[in-house]
Image 1: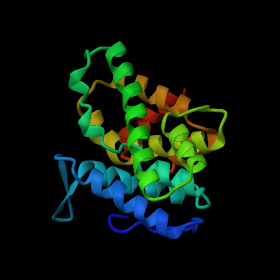
Image 2: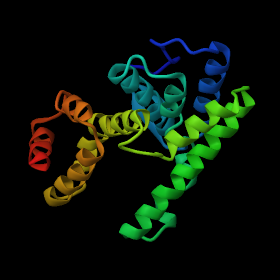
Image 3: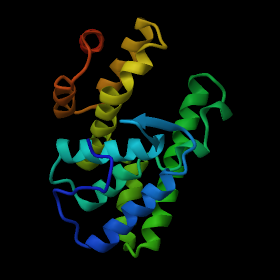
Length: 206
């Protein structure tokens, strides 16, 4: 499990800028007041999520480009600063919240990348990935979406499933699977999930 310094299988063009960006992303996410206990040590939830995104991306796509790796690490940057409770607790409110979060993540990530000296083209590529531009058309946007879904299923779905009824869970899984590529769905079926989770995924896949 990757909970320390980022490990890269694909070396970026500018290793110094990359490491600085990762460090600044992590420092920002470490401000998240919500913590999770990992092996007796507390870690900020958003930082943990970011590290899991990097780990899953390099497992799923070892040759991921530099800008894709940067996007994965900053996928939820500053998420706690725009709480779900600030929006109506209905479908419309949820979609508005998610939409504004994507723009916020992209803006924060871009400001950090600019500080570390990344060029405008790289910054724009990261922003496009974070707002999910051309999902299902851009292979890198699709890869990021696959990784997001895989991280959710592997690390968060079990706890989430305890709070909701089966019908809602199957509906959520159907929407999740729809957003994934065939490669992503295949990877999801290989995750170390409980029998209950696998059963729900099977029902959602029908």
